[in-house]
Length: 229
Image (cartoon, rainbow, N blue to C red; front, side, top):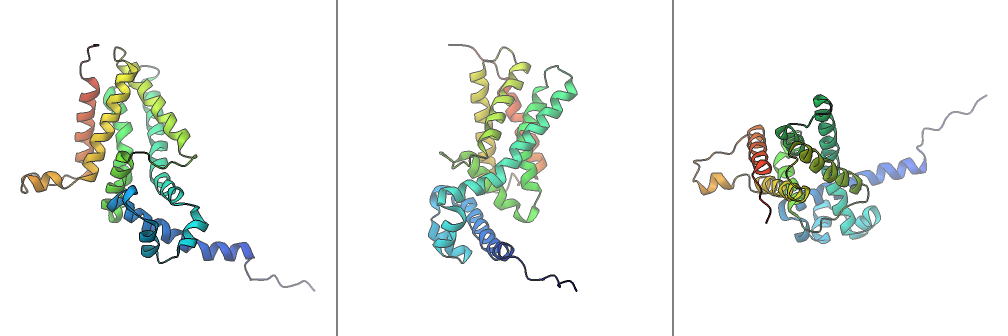
């Protein structure tokens, strides 16, 4: 007679099921607070209070406040950088070795940020602010897993622009791409600003229209004439 298999979960499964909600609550609370107030202006006490957990839970799951912030950032930024690389690869394959049109490069660089925000309409406003924080924050806490993607993006995109605009120095391209990130970060953090300061004369645009305007603006900035000192 064979033994009846036990239906009791293994100890590790029980721990995972118990710990997962706590970890998720911490991440969700931290994400909302970081989006609203910025990474430097949120304390662990605020996060634990919002998540309904104690400080030991944060230390257990993340080790430190910086590690928690790095995980929040990685959960947003890593998928965006992967999509950026995929879109640039697809654009390069379409041109069959020829330089990629500049607007296509800029669209591949910017559109994943807007796609991420649009992917969850309910959390859209929060994600919009959080992406703006991620792009404008100084000394951003970064996980080791995020660095290779960032490095590949910052290598491949200027290289692609250089092939399209061979007379523009790489250093100038890098600065102009940084300016482009700043433009989008400001727009994401202050999406309602134009409507407020114009007294409603300029309504808030849908994400697709904002993205297209950002692509046009940043493409023109990259293409602007340059004269060495």
